[in-house]
Amino acid sequence: MTTLTYQFEQKRLDNMQWSDGSKLSGITALANDEKGRIRKQPLFYLETVSVDSYEDDIYFVNNTDETLSWVAPFKPCRNIKEARAKLGDTSDENLRKVTLYSDGMDSVYQDVLHKQGVRIGSTHMMYDSDAMVQWFIHVPYKGPDTHYAIWQFNVVEKGGIRGIYPLLWDDFSKPLHMVSCDCLSERADMPIEASIYEERCAMLKRLIRSFGVSNAIFILAINDVLYRYGVGWSAPYSESDIQAQDIAMKLTEQKPENAEAVKAIVQAVYDFWFNEGFAKNISMQACEELLSLYQAQTANQSTL
Image 1 (cartoon, rainbow, N blue to C red):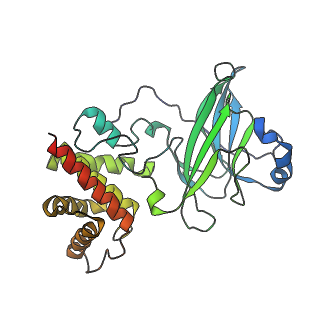
Image 2: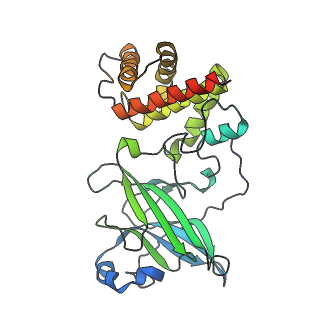
Image 3: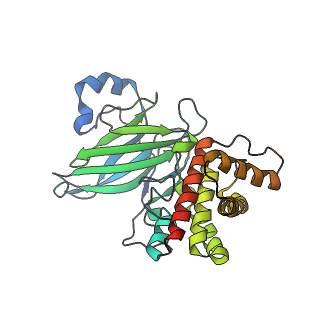
């Protein structure tokens, strides 16, 4: 299912050292940020490494004491809607969108070590000089008050960046030059991690063989909701597919009109497969998302 127009070249550099801001570039050299820069260390930063007289490679550096399980230099999606995929569309192009990250998986890094830099792109002194250049970077790392979070960095600079570019300080404060660095810790905000791409694609293939393309996409979208909200338990992505199939069937049969009715369906499915009340704490926001999926699936089928 993966279709690539080019091959991204992964590169890693070990033992990269933060230099207390001596090589900070562009807007990061603002005087009113100088004291804070000297006092702080970044948890993550970007650094440019010269390729030739005109081009620099850009590296994301893990300056924490932990290994990052993955680094994605793009913006992950919460659901197929954010990937601009559609329920009921059985085209190859829509299937590619449903997989979420088929065009970006070659740029995802696994197990990024302490002090290790990974190449996320490049910048050209001439070609990028007048352009607003943007990078999205996502990494899993605990938040200030959480055991797990996903940090979303949005970097925008005219002409790209030069030197060293902090993304997040070690007190979890945002550098002044950053457009945004958001800590995603709520279930509703969490994207589908790129780390489960292969697992998710394998599930989609199995569902297509059993239920056809349209129904497979519907069930997969339901499973996305179950996974993101941790409905019932914290399980691997592929271990709630049976419940997703049952929920899809019951939604179609019972035709719920509100989120409360959807919640009753989900609870009944989990009561059947596990202990009674196993999914009693399901989020109403998750039920709203499931209701929207059912309504979209019904609307698309009625137009066929």
